[in-house]
Length: 179
Image 1 (cartoon, rainbow, N blue to C red):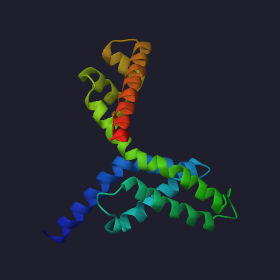
Image 2 (spheres, rainbow, N blue to C red):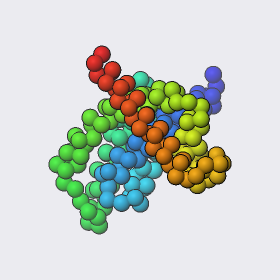
Image 3 (cartoon, rainbow, N blue to C red):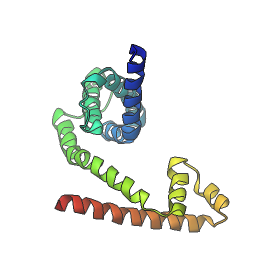
Image 4 (cartoon, rainbow, N blue to C red):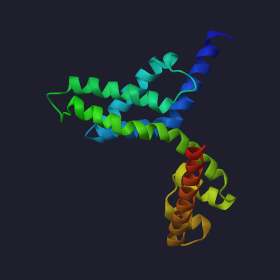
């Protein structure tokens, strides 16, 4: 393989992992900083650091947990840089937030896997509805118009699908815990 191909493969692997985990990493950052603008900046910094250190990421481990660890250090660094200008959390508070987030992070991958399995079990019609709403980010009103249904009936159907997915995920997670 040429160096360009190796770099391209590395880039593709990183981007695939990032795209699948970016919302969780961003949510973690947002939970640790006081506003969206700071979270956006820290998320961008975190991505840059993650990319620069991607060779040190151990394949087969949790990319989300690794990203959150990188984010934690970016938050600590930013906290030191801007300590005079912003709301400050003590180190103990940051450690407590991290400690509270750790069990959630460990469970996230299994929950996402369970969700994927449950989504595959949906009927074609329900899958398409969920895809329109969440993957394509189409407004409920536009979905209702496409489907020739009322807005209220689309909301009800999505709520029904959410309930079914939640029950399915709980069953799947319950089976894992029993194993």
